[in-house]
Image (cartoon, rainbow, N blue to C red; front, top):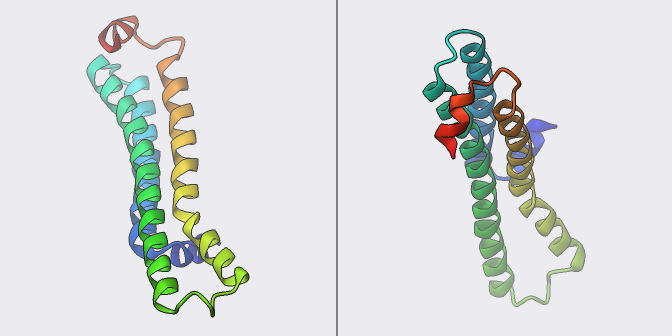
Length: 133
C-alpha cells in the first residue's frame, strides 16, 4: 500500500515526504536517547524543535506537490479542449493530487503531538522552558 501511494502520489515529491517521515522518527528516537542520557538542554530543545520543523516541511512539500500536479493536469485538460475529459477522470486526478498533502499532513499532526508531549515531559529540565520563551 505504501509503495502504491508512492507511485500514485508522484515519486519525486513522495520520496521527499517519506524522507521527512524517516527524519522525524529518527529525531524522536534521538530525543529519547538524549533525554535518558545527558539531558543537555540545548540539544534536547534543538532536537524537539527539529521534529516540528520537519513535520511542517513535509506538509509544505505535499502542498507544493499538489499545486504542481494540478497545474500539470489543467494544462493537459486545456490542451485536449476539455470535451474528452469525463467527471470520473477529473475525480481520479483530484484524488491523486491529495496523496502527498495527506501524507505530509499526517506527519505534521504526529510530529506536533510528539513535540508537545516531549516539551511537557514531567522530568523535562525546567530551564529549557525558559530558553524557549
